[in-house]
Amino acid sequence: MKLNVIVDERVYAVDVPQPILLDAEVFFRKMDADMDRGWQMGPEFIENPDRLQRCQIAANKLLVSLSGANETMVTLMAGYILKRLPGITGVRIDTGGEMLHTEMLYEKPDNRPSPSPSAGSASPARKLGKLEAMEQAGKDVTKVYQVGKSYRFAVRDLRTGEWLESGPSDTEQEAYEKRMQAYKRRLDELTGQQS
Image 1 (spheres, rainbow, N blue to C red):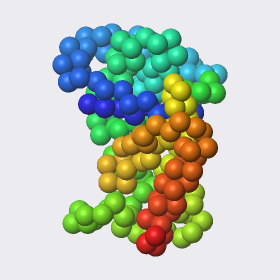
Image 2 (cartoon, one colour; image 1 turned 120 degrees about the vertical axis):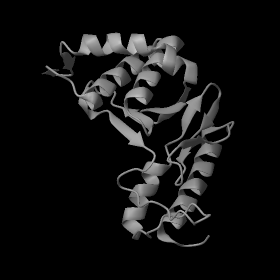
Image 3 (cartoon, rainbow, N blue to C red; image 1 turned 180 degrees about the vertical axis):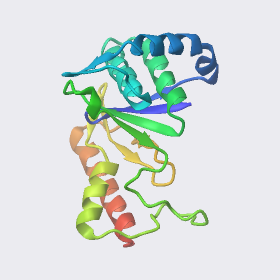
């Protein structure tokens, strides 16, 4: 299974093999037992974190593991989130120290109309107005970010809700131009215009 992890404008696709989801259940239960005693989530102490809050805590641990390049913990924390929240596709981690602002992303985002099952295209079932479409396209196409020596951006697939990373660009300007083309295509899809 895969979990898309969004940190600021960067998207990391964390692949969690199925055996890890099964084998790590003892570890996950120990995490739950630790959280049963309550948890400090930013300025607030939560006495009995619910399932969503527990996954926000795991997402914070995932963020710390990403910055420390601890791949094992990254995989385990992503596995915990995938196991505890069925149907989740991604997590947008708050980096401002406010764990409760970490957002979970699902296959069918609440603010997006579902495409009709018979539709072969990625167009939404309902066309959006220009301003609403511009705002949504800005959420569906990330800003340009650097990966090693190349530049990329990611686009959310309307059908699956998964993030698809662009190919590498040698310069930030080249990636920005490609991103603007992707933004324009998404805008046209959302408003029902054909480019």
